[in-house]
Length: 178
Image (cartoon, rainbow, N blue to C red; front, side, top):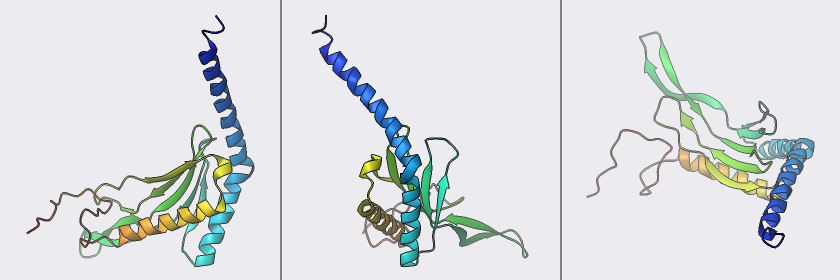
């Protein structure tokens, strides 16, 4: 019977190893990685003069996130209610998020800007998923660069590049060529 269960036994051993890694990854996040990310991101935005805030979301244990947010502002668009009042459309300027996954690994996500009540927000972009020991400063620098490029592209939307889509699903038909 042992020979027949050899492959199953190996798979069970691997399963137990994966479960053990989850506990280790969660401990690394709690003991050092979360604070390291906060310190790194705060230092980076201060160094380059980017108006952003770093926040820790800890509503759920072992599903925490560190977010670099570009904030929320009036979009500059509004609905006139009457001569005295306008209802402003609020714009979220986007975020770079380091989120713990259920297995203790870290997913890095770009949350695109969106304007409330103006189309559907663009789905977030997953940059990568890392084991905590893989998440080094050079990777974080690349994440910041990719984040700011994605946000800049979103903000600079125009029709110069065919098939370049802004983060909205609107009821406007695509322009006809010709």
